[in-house]
Each structure stands twice: as structure tokens, then as C-alpha cells.
Image (tube, rainbow, N blue to C red; front, side, top):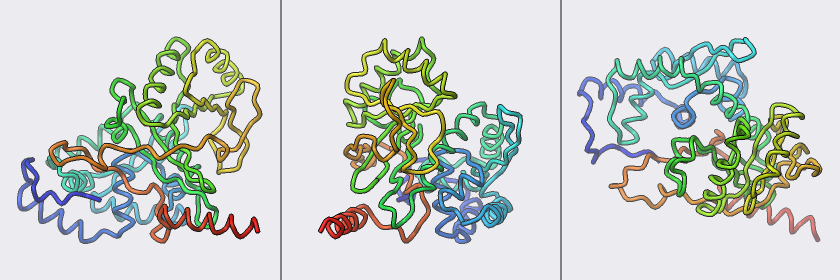
Length: 326
């Protein structure tokens, strides 16, 4: 899925750096390359989140591999202080990781000093709290999506990939997910945290424009508490919600089938799998010309090399449904 950089018009790194990057590249496992995609798209994740996405089966094994990669400057780590005052060890791409990703994506390869500053800036980024909250949401969703359950988190696109979607301009950072559940694709936008009351009408209009342009009309909005969720619905009552399905919750999903989404002020809580089905949102990169220079899309957000492709998942689901209905 990565470009080779053969026809790149960007300045090429020195032959010495290219030689070093080639050595690093040869040392990578397939799961390491998947990790590159995930960290490049979503910037920062914790070990527990990476394990939920399938990077090793235990935090101990995942941490061991991450430390090996860190010793080669492929990954980097830093301690992040949460709003509650606790410390979290976070992982991001290191100097060589950022250089390799740029080379694969046909982008200008940063010099060592520039790449090191990107790593330092990531550790000090005030948006880390938001990025980790988003990562927690999607990793919990991925945790319950395993072979044999007829469920799968097919796509997770962060702001980098969403920026190229139709009608995305001016909407701020967007988070898109596509979830497969028992024969149905559920496409959705995740908006976190809940919008301030004054900003809510503009946010809703933005998602209506996105829904008209992409076909994805479900917007998930986690609330900090039950009182905050109730107030959010009071504020939504003053908005025109035509063309949208708004779903709210007071906690992150801990797996499909947990009845905790509300799609109306007094509505019953429903499982994630009961949200409206949609067609898959098409991304411009799939039909892009080289001159458009769009960054490649990230791969499957769950590491599982034996996971079935879309067609097999659908075929197996249809077979199972036909068998159980006879």
C-alpha cells in the first residue's frame, strides 16, 4: 500500500541516510509495518490500546517489541500526564520511523534534527489527551471485533486521511470509522468531546454537509456524564437534525452488543450493532492520480494477518445465516 518513492519529485536524502533506512527497513516484521501505519495516522497510542488492536497478545510482549524498535529509533516513548493526574506511557514514531514513513509515502524525508523535533513536539502536544481518548474509543471497539464473531472494525481514518474527503474543508479534525456487524456496514463519525452549546448548530450543519457528500450520516457523541448527556439532548432539540442519526453515550464501548447508545432524548439504550447501516464511504485516494499527491490511506486498524477480507466475511455470514434459518 506504500509508494516506493521511485518517481518522487521531493529532495532525496543522502546516500548514507538511505543506506541506514534500508538497514532499518530490512529488520522490520510485517506487524512493525502495520504499527507504522497506525502511529503515522493516529500519532500516539498506549501499550494497552495497541494490544487491543492486535499488536502482540499481552502488554509485556508488546512493550518488549516496542522497546526493541525504540532502540533503533523506529519508535519513541514519553510519559503523558492525564487530566486526572495519572501518568501514561505513550508511544509514537521515532526519528527513523518518521523518516521511513515519509520515504514510503513519497514525501520529503526530514533530516535527523527535524525528525527529532517532531518527536519532541509530539510529546508536548496539548492534543495528546484528545488523541488518547479517541484511541481508547476505537481500541475498545476493535477489542470485541475478532474472527468468528462476524464483526470487524474495517476502517479508522484520523484527521490526516479525513481531510481529503468531500466537504471536509473547514470542519476541523474528523474521525471516521467503518464497522462490520453481521452482514451490515456501519459507517460513523466520532465527535469527542461533546460540542459546546454555542458551537453545536455549526457542528451539526457540518456533519449534514459531510453526510450529503459521503453518505455517512451517523454521528457518535460521547458525553462525560449522564447529566451532560441529558443537557446535550436538550441542546440538540433546538437544532435541525435532518439527515443525521445522532447517538450518544456516557462511556466508551467495551465491545459490540453492549446496550449503551441513545439515538433520541428518551430512547432506549441500544447496542452499537443496532446503529443504522450505511454503504462504505469512498475515499478520493482510491481513485487518485499521482499528480494529486494524496497520502496513502492507513491499512486495516486491527493486526490479524489471517483475518478474512470483506468478501469472505460477507460470504461466511451469508452461509451461517442460511444454515441457521433452515
